[in-house]
Image (tube, rainbow, N blue to C red; front, side):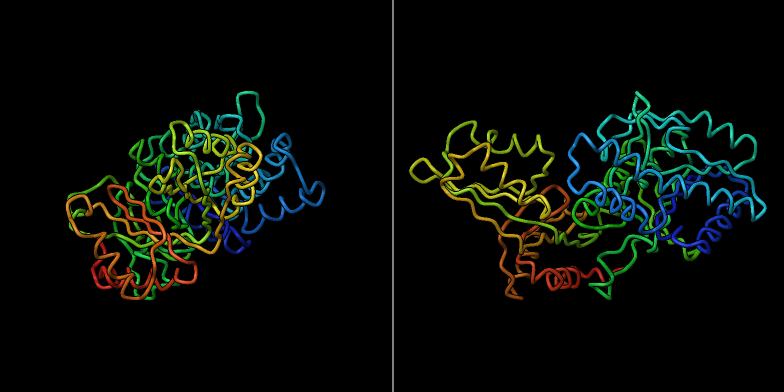
Length: 410
């Protein structure tokens, strides 16, 4: 078997933990597997490097993002060298690779690049010599040889993408938690670990606030059929398998509850109710890479309406400035903002074949006096925006209300 193992920043955060990673990699190889290891920068290192960059230039423009990638990528380069040395110290054989050395080709969107192709030849050559291949996550190169990075959480994407390129039997994502839970255990003490979850459910959970896996890594897994095993680097326990949807998954009404606390709401007052206006509003936001989530348009009155949408809290100021600059006539009518909101969601493939989930969700929140400000639905999830002060209460109410703390893991 060919196994890809990805270790996050906390897993390689100290010398002792790096030694533990080395021992685990060697143990996996001794079981008869070919092993490819993807590592992140040591915990806190990327933040330290970017803080240094800000000390030199506290307002870098987009044209300087290439240099930020040169700086940020060094964290992973240090990690692969250290892990390779640790494997050698433990009696194994290893060879380190940067993203460029194993030809992880990306586009040229610096700080948020997307993988275009991976040439696995050098990795296969190392495996053929009995070595453990240790690859830097989070990074690649564009077609002109510039160093690029994949954005926060990009090492997960590297791991699953490399597993897909090498046609690995499994991709193990090692982290500081031992799997995917029905809710954040810090919020819901009764939360349970899920044994198996579908790609679609995991994709929704990741996009709605669950921090266990990066969204693009799940997309890669779903597209190429890579089985992903999320597990703890601090014990040998079985974690959570992210796999294609299975029949028994439909029997569970709700698989998990999440909360996203970094949301903000924008309301444009008196928007002309005519074709093309929505496109005119959202085009500059899209061009600025500001992700718009929920959108609600009120009933038209005298040819005008109110339009409300949500954006990441960190993009609120920039979004409002863009609207004022590109659409001054709409800004004059009035803009209201609210950054004291959160988005709470329930997710489950069982919603496809069961009615009444929305009604039950709304009733549970109403019983606690939690007012719903916005609603969004898809085939397997329901999201509501509520006041931020109710975030944790809403999660606990829904988690317990749907019996997630009492049902056995899938």
